[in-house]
Image (cartoon, rainbow, N blue to C red; front, side):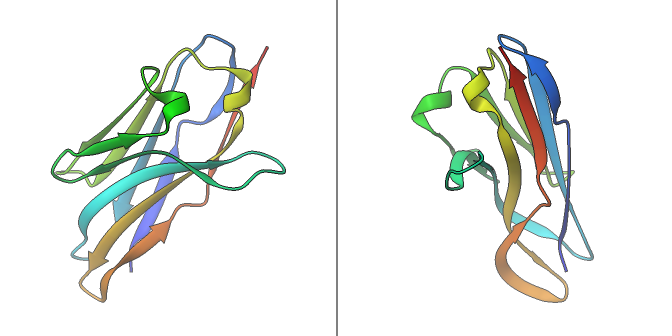
Length: 120
């Protein structure tokens, strides 16, 4: 099994920054890609940013130039640096990964979510 542990959410004023982290763990874990989605109240979950283990990245248009995703392959950890935060970025942010372990094949896994609140 693959477990994801997220950290770094919280309350910040508009214009501020937060850094989210998500670590994948388990026996024999291998990661192909990791990313972040978010879900605001009353809205559908949407992709924020994603990266492959080879460094290919993609971003939602609304966060380009403000958010940066990076991956530490040695630690199976993905980071999301969020700068110039806006109130509309308020949401629960979910980490996900395409990963395998010694007991499970390649499949997608989701974290429990971390709340990001941006006050105006």
